[in-house]
Picture 1 (cartoon, helix red, strand yellow):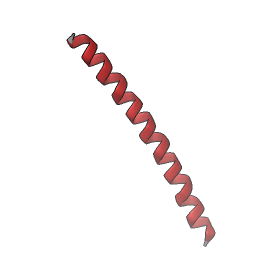
Picture 2 (spheres, helix red, strand yellow; picture 1 turned 60 degrees about the vertical axis):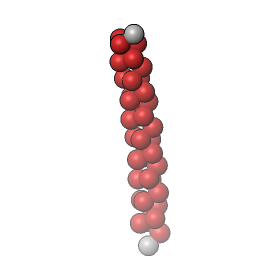
Picture 3 (cartoon, helix red, strand yellow; picture 1 turned 90 degrees about the horizontal axis):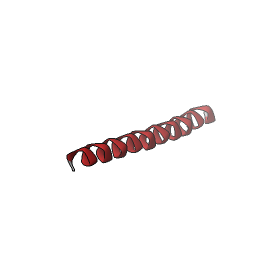
Picture 4 (spheres, helix red, strand yellow; picture 1 turned 45 degrees about the horizontal axis):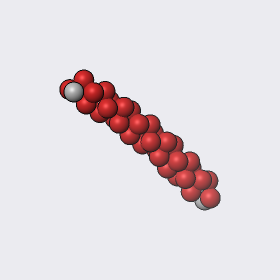
Amino acid sequence: MNLMLSVASKIIFEARSRVSLQQLRIWEEEVTLFWNMD
């Protein structure tokens, strides 16, 4: 049971970090577009 929980939490953590990385890239692109407008 504990093994299953640790595996599940690890998968959730990895998925969360991947999503945040994609979000950071999107924000980075938006910021560069905003700076290039000036």
